[in-house]
Image (cartoon, rainbow, N blue to C red):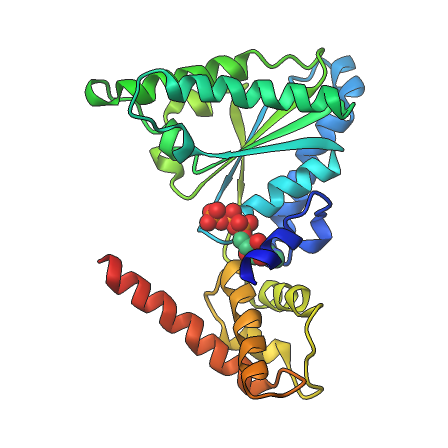
Length: 274
Ligand code: ATP
């Protein structure tokens, strides 16, 4: 059901209102997107259009949600891929997949009669890592293709393409990607603070029966350091506990148990990978 929930919140209709916390990241992103929306004006001023936005921050903080909301905000088609999809044994396959991704965005925009396209690449560090020569030759081709595609984005053409990439290892990225005209806008998407956690919990509680006694602010306090994805899990696990107890509502106790479970789960995950 986690998957179903993710799909629901990840539907094409996702807006910034459905992203909890992240007030400053959302604001910065919206400001950058306004450049895309107000393309006529920026042309008059001779301002260089934004081609790439890099979202950085820990896993599960809502970077993918931000990219989807960006597409919705600009009335764009949304095309997504993960950096790991471009890593292939055979030289040239990664590069041709990059080409296909851009082609796909243009084709879909034409078909759906949209003027804008947002291309989202998660884990950009996998393809955009620093080039060091030698064994990385296959990656080089893929990265070069990405740079070529970015340089080939012209705002006078529709669809206007915006590339949004996400990474939690910004320092690993090749400097060519960060140059002006490429990913020159960086937005930090951090772990939520208490207010942000409370907001995220509220969003994920919307379709769930909560007992009147439930105090989400207290839950937010107890879940210090949790990401949005972990908070989504907390709500989900709490609902499972309530169902298991054959109750019609989720209690504060269920939520506390769910916090422990998510925290423990993270610990055992970490131990098993160590
Ligand atoms: P990763 O880097 O691991 O891909 P991410 O930062 O892209 O993570 P998302 O995929 O956007 O994270 O989030 C995963 C899920 O966690 C979302 O589908 C949503 O259910 C929940 N979530 C994460 N952040 C938020 C948030 N700020 N508000 C509401 N839900 C959130």
